[in-house]
Amino acid sequence: MLKVIRDGWIVTQNEKREIVRGDVVIDGDNIVSVGGKYNGSADVEIDAKGDIVMPGMINTHTHVAMSVMKGVVDDLTFQGFLDKVFEIDSDRTDEDLTVGTKLGCMEMMRGGTTTFVDLYYSEDVIAKAVEEAGIRGVLCWCTLDEQFTTQNGNPVDNAKHFVSTHQGMRKVIPSIGLQGVYVCGEETCIRASEFAKEKDIPLNIHVSETRGEVNNLKKDKGLRPVEWLNKIGALDSHMVAAHSAWLTMNEVRLMGEAGMSVALCPVSNMKLATGGVAPVPEFVANGVNVSIGTDSNTSNNSLDMFSEMKVCGLLQKSSRWDPTVTPAQQLLDFATINGAKAIGMQDKLGSIEVGKYADIVILDGKAPNLRPLLPENMVANIAYSASSLNVKTVLCQGDVVVDDRRITTLDVDSVLDASEDAWRFLCQRS
Image 1: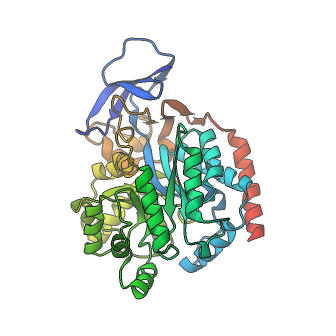
Image 2: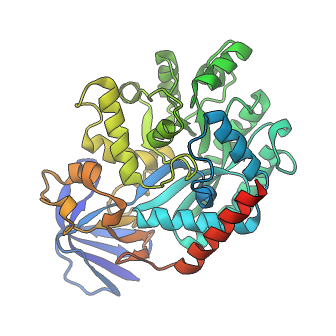
Image 3: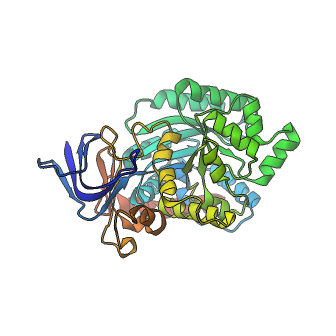
């Protein structure tokens, strides 16, 4: 099926970061033409006159099924937050996992996110809901030592089974994850890392989120988390390290040498008051690929990548007393092309270029918060002024999943109604 997006301002995010006015032509899954005027006809015509046409954003760390848990664990200490979350997690059902996943996918697609990286258990249940929602999920089955898990069987074996049974899906990429060094011993970390290398899939992990996590490992192993992961041979280019806030320069260099990616989660870190600010300029200088994640709706309460992008930039500027760090173009890179690189899909995602998947977001060019709108200020408007409310239309791999602000893939009202039932169920159980 041929689709054409007409007469938009196309923020390509290509190598030259060009902004052009014109049409985008899509044939099936892929982009076949960018810019200029397409004189032919198409099966689907989308009027984007004067609108911003940008790549779909990539959320590189979240826990989508927790979207039904908004407001359950707010305003608690970090340990209190963890205790209550783990209590609820151990008691969840396939039904509320499904509702939570659909709700989270709806929020993300309405906010211009077309790909997300998830870290959770029961990813087989989540995969079915993601498939229905129609956006792309890189679903990392969470692994940890057996003594700490409520999963049946060995978590690494469970992850391997999930990957083997879900390969080849159109928009679901089955992967593996590690909860963190505080519950993952050497054998678990090595097995998960070796499997990610063998299958050439991303490995999502919580790294140096809190000072306590770092200090406890240093007492136990004599090394900080990144140093220890490097020593046991688990540090690798497949690894996407969420948070990464409490690091030394030695650890930053080790991450760069390994070709790693980080998923910054500034809103979650600030809401949980875990302290520490990810050393973004040092990451960039040392070759660490920087991307952005929202974390979950329990620790962020939002999956809005526009908000995350802005907060990420403001936190870096404020903490450095330097308004020149993390400029707007760099923030947009973090949310798009760098996110694609983090999951090994930079040849398919992250920019609007011929041959890539048609993961495209159209923002309302008539919205007052985006005006004045000129090529000279367009990227800054996206990074600092835009919100999820500006999203009009979203395509994921050529499929229109949001059409003029209407989600096309799911029964929205039934998901919304079911989310309240799920919330009450989980609160009562906990």
